[in-house]
Image (tube, rainbow, N blue to C red; front, side):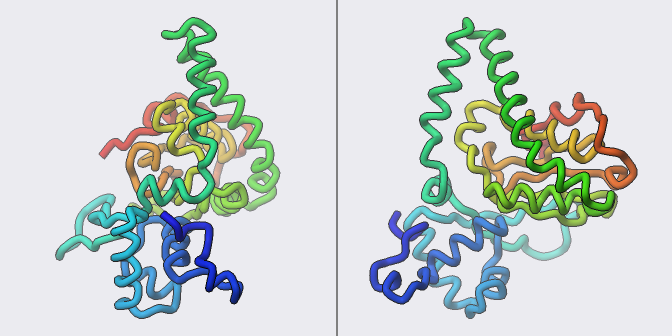
Length: 252
């Protein structure tokens, strides 16, 4: 796959990225997207978007899926959305996946494997995300209570997660959506990474949160549900038992 992250030579001369690269990048930044979504974001006709998507599908960069609906379905056929394939994600910044997975396998075996190995991976995952969260804490605590999910999304985006906050379909809370995960392939083998990340979100936002979907388990976007009670709690204490129970898993 030759387009992602590197424009063709003739386009490099003009300093512009290829349109096809822009389409793929838009899906990375915004998550599963319809032809209409892409056309509006990129200022292209739907016919042009479909033409580029056909090539990206042929190159195994994106794939079409039925749009996932949370809650009651509306009438009519579900919209078709396009998501990045593993190949498409690989072309961005996941070049160290094999090294990271090998290192975690080594850690698990070095302490004896089995339950001890699982515990070691969990301890590593928690320590990693706890250290990472320190860069997010200041931004979250500086925000007004009702804006903390948005503040966390911006902080995550700065680390390459292409995150956004939005009102949940049920209107009773918010969803934190991460359209990219730099460690998705490693998390597929070690779900402790997803679980630790969910715990950290709960700690930062000061409330129970629920992971609804993850890229590591085949979903188009990592989605975490945050109830409206987030805006009424401090970020100093929280419990993690319910948060970890669904982290990294798709309950649907």
